[in-house]
Image (tube, rainbow, N blue to C red):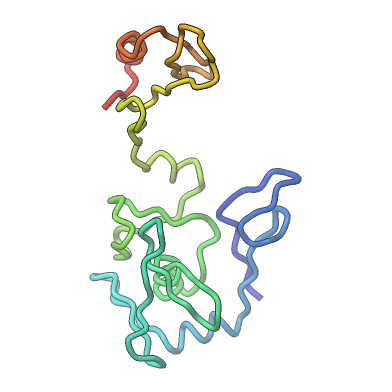
Length: 176
């Protein structure tokens, strides 16, 4: 049996993605052998093909990752690409260096821990304020300071959106 580290580190009493409590995902050797014998991978293009099924190259999930179904289980294509190139499943997370989740060239993939993977993610603009890192505090119920931002593990509240944006700019934090 091959053990793959869970991609989500669960807290002590929190369930992880694999249905267990802070356990590793178990991939049977037969699945690894099946993938190695029925799949091929072109490392220069990132293309994965299989010889046991036609027109079964997977589909995109809601997050934009290519998912391939093998024996009633779903596997992310970049993890299969890693297996086909290096001969074993990765023990950590796989990061797409150029942030394109469908680009599975081996030169674009690297094995990293969760912290490093988060550093390579893009920051998202808050849809209610239109600014990165500034949130509309809906719990204030009539209080005047309605906009919040976090800096050095503290929450700061502001009367206006402009004050919050200026605070982020003064502390060299991204706003757009």
